[in-house]
Image (cartoon, rainbow, N blue to C red; front, top):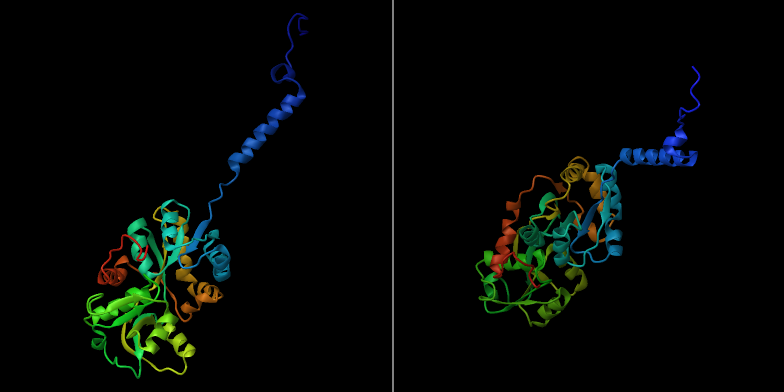
Length: 306
């Protein structure tokens, strides 16, 4: 049937305009479809270390580890520099960092201030505190330190301050009562020990080896040593992505040896040589550290020396 000439005939142009408009509409529809289909990429897990300042130093020590952990866990890892242990707490609480490697003394405070969750412990072989005196000096036993000056290293350090103070406490000497504690850098303290200005120095096993090498003409004696200290520990932000953190933890469980070899690429990380990762770690394992804080008369609501 032939249409009446008065009957309007509609085309696509009547509905959609000219061809350029149609092409624009189709392009927009396609772009929307691609946007909907594209996967949402997860943010990288940011990894910090409390005793390394500056990104360059962090990369020197942990770049190989970063790469290995990414390959094994399937998670993107990004090194994140913090200027101090206090800065690490702030970064955790503000959601700026996801994973933090720290020492046992720092962990006790970080746990209280952030409720960070344990991922894995990093064992340090021969990690214990000890009290060192001159072999030919007047101090032969811990009791000989009564009324005398004992020096400690970095304030708040597990193995240079809190640990040695706890060793003396375990042997019956009360901090700042039975002896006079002083915080002095290790080499300066040893020079004072040699001069007879102080009676003993608190340090760890690695430090004693360095001291014996630096002062070969002197003989030193350990008059007391403590139990092995709790390990360094990797924690995760309390509200970090649970699946991502689980993947990281699994990487340490299943490929710990590979990850340790990557860690040992860093010069300062040689303290972990011969060690391994521990996955079965409880917060209560660090109660011994909390007792150290009590020994020197402070609590774990803030870092010592802050």
